[in-house]
Length: 407
Ligand code: MLT
View (cartoon, rainbow, N blue to C red):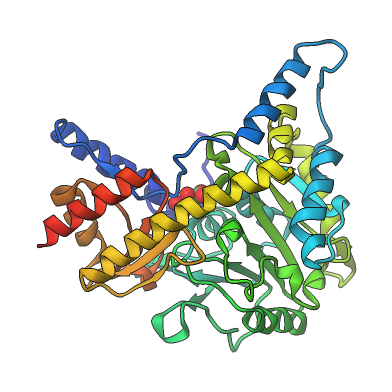
């Protein structure tokens, strides 16, 4: 009989958010009369900005005419979107990124999960703990780790994010090849300063390593002193890849559009020590495995950069940030230590008990779904993450229910 990729057997039975969804369905089946409020997975609830809707509709009309119809587009994305991205998200902030370095895709989850394919099997990888599970699981699937022992895979270098380091890990003592960083952080909501990112860029240069910088939540940064892109840090073009998404800023979780930036000067070497362009390798992979994001979706994403779209995105992210403020204040009032929720839609809460226990308590007693911190790694044990992505009404009600349940 055909054999399986046995690396999959090292994984936990199901993906964190599928696990939570199963528990929630079981609860709903047993308690059909009790409505639940979902503050678990970071899925947006508010509609697409009007500017995006209009562009989306107009592009669908284009597809209905022979003259304006679009078939296969460029795998890397249409020039109109790549140029808008380079100009508005990078050049406007003094970060040197060219449109040709932008790869438009259908999700930062897919990109941050797939990127590892272009690197060697025997590289040393550093992952934060707690961590967005995609970074870990995709490398486990690829066979770059040993077994999971006590919640940690053998072979990874874990970067502990703790209250002591303000949830921003320092560079490790040892040398690694690939480093996953995410700021504003999922799951903790922590942000990193320019100085902190500079230390990582310098370390990567010293090691000949590459940083995979996940900036999916950057639209929530309000503190102007914080960097919004790793390319705002001197030297980052030589060592970093950045992932961005339209999911959390413009509500594209169900519409699907994101992008990855790979500077053309970024290099990695083969076993013989010859240098190769990482941009060229990713381009090769992208063209082989991906046929581009649909034209209407790219037109809708482009509208994010129009005057109307930018104002709507600001209002949308302000709205979720206000939700985050309400959650954080309510949890703090109840005596919990919290971080995040200021330049981030996530609030990371010290649950003062095992995280799945608190998850069950909030589900069973308040009908509120959160994400147990243990699902993000061993350093997440004893914490939960609450997401600010919901309507104001539900956020306020969820906090009232939690207050009552814990009274
Ligand atoms: C999360 O809740 O961590 C995110 O929604 C996951 C994702 O964006 O894939």
